[in-house]
Amino acid sequence: MHMQHFALLYHRTVAITASILAEGVALLLARIALAGIFWRAGRSKVMEGSLFEISDATRYLFEFDYAAVPLPPEIAAPLAMVSEHLFPALLVIGLATRLSAAALLAMTLVIQVFVFPEAWWTTHILWAALAAVLIVRGGGVMSLDTLVSRWRQRRA
Image (cartoon, rainbow, N blue to C red; front, side):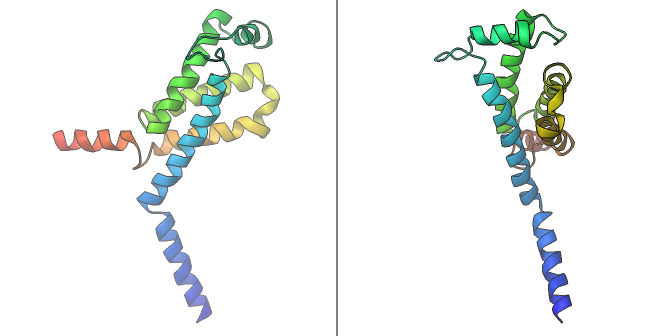
């Protein structure tokens, strides 16, 4: 009797956690987690008190410390700063989730290969895993992607 009770409890738990709503919550958390990582990095690249003015420290880093990145620093620094603001913002609202996650995965791989090659197991694998889940599953039911998709289906 105890084994049947355990099996029933297990199957109910699986059904709840496999629901669209539970998946939506998990994907929302993944979107927020990945967005937070890159948003904070983007904010660290701008001058204190400004919205998007690149700091001198950032210019220095891209010119000297991140010199292996295969783009000129005057292109790489603003591109990184804009990407680290735009794609996290899109992730939080769940708009263009797959595209945004793919862009942040690409940034992760650039950082891994050209900037911090020693950080794969300590940091970058987690970023890559979050991005991969979002690329494969999308933003979930708690995203603008879902609202747009439903709107388009109704209009078709």
